[in-house]
Length: 194
Length: 76
Image (cartoon, rainbow over all chains, first blue to last red):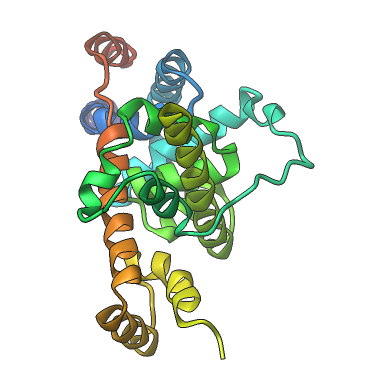
């Protein structure tokens, strides 16, 4: 009889912990989506990826260690699922994207603008579409780190853990990825100008 | 000797990420204080990062929010 009561107590505690976990995970969904939207290739992909991620998270809630970073944990699931979906096949292994130097975009925009005096105005020559399109044109390996660090505010260490790569690789991909992004932006902005 | 503007360009990303050493930070700031061209380019990079963030920020569709909530496992 006592054992039954203990069992009932244990089940009730577990149910309460699970409900709390689900609530916490759902409360983070906006933040997870902001990152997922650009890790995935399209809005539809992001939508599916989010549902798969949450379905898996709810099933394996016991493997989450309370007190650790739940957003990073959810994104780890999401990036793994994204890779499982065969996304990596899109990448040609021999592809070495061209990258410009760090000042390339500014210099290209400024040379098309007489008497540049306000850097904010130079930036505003880029449209929201330019930015979203340029971001999606950055190869996945580089884009993943830009999205996690620059859009998702993850530290280098968190990004390394989520993507299962060394911190040094996060740093070098971030550095190159941002340059690639700027080259893509320069191309789309200059296309519009001509 | 290395072109100071080229060196300053190399330090731009680590500068924005706050990962320069004190000595490097001092070096970058000393160059920025005297070089308007690099100063403008640093300012542009700063604005660009904010702008990219803003442009890429997309709200989660309300429908998806409902779908995620429906994935919760019902209590027995």
